[in-house]
Image (cartoon, rainbow, N blue to C red; front, side):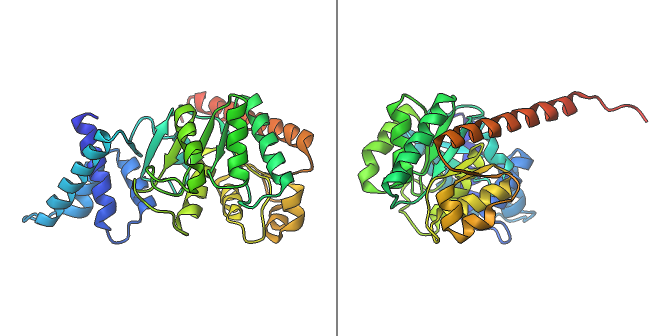
Amino acid sequence: MTTQAVDQAAATVALLRAKVRGHGWNSLATEIWYAGDAVRVWKELVEGDSLVPDPRDSQLLDEARDDVLRWEKDGLRFLTVLDPDFPSRLRDIREVPPFLFAEGALVPEDRGMSVVGSRKASERGHQIAGAAAELLVSKGLTVIAGLAAGVDTAAHRAALAVGGRTAAFIGTGITRAYPATNRKLQAEIGRRGLVLSQFWPDAEPSKSAFPIRNTAMSGYGMGTIVVEAGETSGTRIQARVAVEHGRPVILTDMVAERTQWGAALVGRPGVHVVTGIDDLDKTIDEVLDAQASLALALEAIGSVAPTAA
């Protein structure tokens, strides 16, 4: 990292640890992105106009810089929202993470969809997850999942088995593996795909971390495929948030018919229900075509120069 990059990264870390009143992690990320300068935001929000600097502020900044340099020395890739390689789609959502730790290949404008569902999936759920992943790979898309047991694991493994790209959003720090049984799978995805974490490197799994992880997964991808889930499954959070993000949501008939939250989403804009693999194949194509048409329309609008009054 260059000296300037270290300064920006350190200021970002210090801002998050300073716990500035009225500024949560997502709002700080947005403020840093809009300002284009984390050091400036640090000076405005923490140092302020004080004529006598608080030594605690300098200490916090120095500790953050030490951590950034240590992470780099340990081989951890640390990205702030200002980094050119930071996933662009994540910047479009309200819950944009202020930073990410990444292992693997970062692809600009990574085109992919999430495949999510129950940790205790049925045999049919595993089969559909694998088939969905293979479909996505066949269309040149990245398979995004959360490295959990059940549907996530089936999707990751199926993508790798057919030589496709898969990205894992984990609910722990980048140096952790959860569940422990997926440690080897996580390492393989890091070598052949991408592992992303929005938590401090040694963060343990927590109940609050997984909904945060699912929100980022929704923002990163072009859509979410919900394979199988229960009434209280955390997957429902990603489905709901994806609708809020304006991302397409594809529900299997199992989810639409057997859960109240799934049934409540049916009929919402961008929500599709599929009854089998052929139907899923067709729906993915429809979603991709619609997004391509929208992108062309926006490009055409942007290319039209404003006329003088």
